[in-house]
Length: 261
Ligand SMILES: Cc1cc2nc3c(=O)[nH]c(=O)nc-3n(C[C@H](O)[C@H](O)[C@H](O)COP(=O)(O)O)c2cc1C
Ligand code: SF4
Ligand code: SF4
Image 1 (cartoon, rainbow, N blue to C red):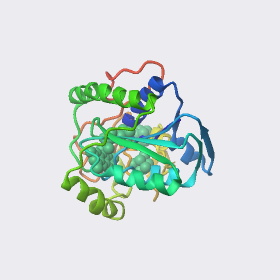
Image 2 (image 1 turned 120 degrees about the horizontal axis):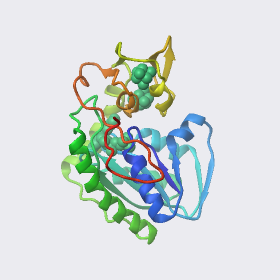
Image 3 (image 1 turned 90 degrees about the horizontal axis):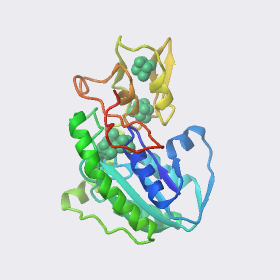
């Protein structure tokens, strides 16, 4: 069973590719979190967790999902982390998570996909995003092949800087950086409600046809990047930057759609 968490579509895209290659089903962690409650998932195929990298580890929302639900069946767990640059020492924490859950850790691989963290970093434009996506596809297919064959993933190289970022910066990231306080909607907002519908944590509500943000934000960037009229900004950081959102395309996956326009 392929579980994915995705703010702006990269990890969903990777999950669907892996599901296609392994003949398995892709399940949205965001949808499961939104509907609430713990579940028992049974799969004789390996568990594959596909997520964005958040601060050089798997996102806390995905970690919580794994800790709070029960997984029966093969008990083999793979992790595929999409990222804008690198996932540091994320594998170590995924392996510890598996130990805590009684799952057999089969490895973690990072896959570079378009950067989506518009609130903090520069993000690629449409042409550059398409190139990055095209380069990502063979890597995702190679990972899917190993999963299909039941082989462990070859570990990514971890630099001392990567080790440090995962160990020391990640714990500071959530309390000091992750908050919805910087989001606001401009007068361009049409009240369509897409931001509220897409938030995987039900953290956006419409009041008088305008979005308001609550306190459960995980900085996934879905609301700001998927607004059809680019009416959402984050402080001054997002002004003038391209929005990146890869739409879902379960039937025919094509990387030629890196921006939602
Ligand atoms: C909150 C946040 C933290 C991020 N941290 C990292 C990081 O540590 N390393 C990295 O290479 N990319 C990082 N990124 C970029 C994303 O991991 C990357 O663009 C990912 O493919 C987005 O996946 P999605 O489209 O499925 O949400 C971060 C993005 C966000 C929104
Ligand atoms: S998606 Fe954009 S236009 Fe639609 S309600 Fe949200 S901010 Fe307004
Ligand atoms: S409020 Fe926006 S950035 Fe925060 S979790 Fe929801 S969609 Fe993601």
